[in-house]
Image 1 (cartoon, rainbow, N blue to C red):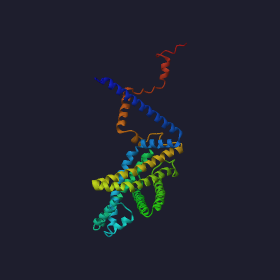
Image 2 (tube, one colour):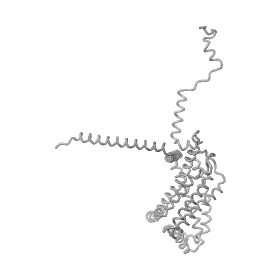
Image 3 (cartoon, rainbow, N blue to C red):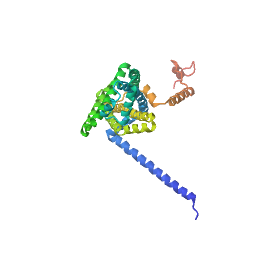
Image 4 (cartoon, helix red, strand yellow):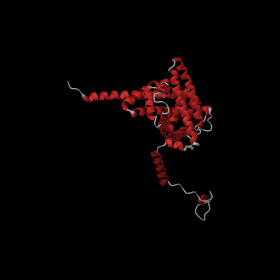
Length: 357
C-alpha cells in the first residue's frame, strides 16, 4: 500500500494553518476583552498606566542597577557587624542567634565570623565603617537617580551626601532590625506572629513613606500622593520577608552547601533585585496615581533628558540624526524673500507696470 506523502503533508499544513488562525483569533479576542476592561474599569486602567510608566522608564534596568548597589552595601555592612561581634565572647553569639530565630546558615556564618574576628576586631570595624560610608553614598545616589528617571524628571545632583549616607544606614538598619525582631516574636507564638506580621506591614509602610517623601518628585505631587507607593513597599517587603524566612533561607543554606560562597551570593543578588524592583515599582505606581488623580502629567508634554535616555537607544538616536541630516542636504531650506520682492514679481518685468484687466 503506497502512501501519498504530498497529500499527508498538505493535510498537516492545513491543520497547522487552521490552528494558527484559531490562535490568532483567540489572541485578538483576548486583546479586545482586555482593552474593553481597560476602558470600563478604572482599576484595570490604573494597572496598565503603571505598567506603561514602568516600561517607558526602564524599570528592570533601574532595578538591576539599584540591586547591584544594594548588594555592594551588604558587604561592608556585614563587615561592620562581624567587627562588632568580635567584641563578644566567641561562644556567646550562638545564644544570640538562637534567640533571634535566625536560620542555620546565618547562625553558623555569624558564629564562625565571631571566632575569626575576635583578634582583629578593631581593624575590621574601622575598615568596615569606611567602606560602609562609601557604599551608602553610592547607594543613595543610585536611588536618587533611579527615582528621578522613574518620575521622568530632569537629573538633579544629590545634596548633602554624608547626610544621605547616614539616612541610608538608618533606614536599612531599621528595616533589618524590624525583621530580626519579627522573627523572634514569631518564634514565641502563632498568634503573636500574626499580629507582628500586620504591625510590620504598617511599620514598613510608614518607613517607606518617609523615604519616598525625601526622594525627588514633581512639584504637583503632594506627600499624601506617595501613599500608594509606600503601601506597595510595605506589603511587598513583608511578602518578601515571609518568602525569605520560609523559602530563601533554605535555598541560601542549600546553595551555600552545594556551590559555596557563589551560591549564597547569587541568592542574595536575587533578594536584592526583588527589593529594588519593589522600590522602583512604588515610584511608577505613584506616577500613575498622580496621572489619574491629578488630571495631567507634566512629564509627557516635552521630552526631557530622562525620556531620551529611556525611550531611545544610542543606535536609534544616531540613525534619526543621520536621516535628518540627509533630508536637510537633499532639500535645503529656501532663503527668506527680500523686502519688496513680491511687489516686483507682481509688476512683471522691469520697467513695465501691471497690465490692466
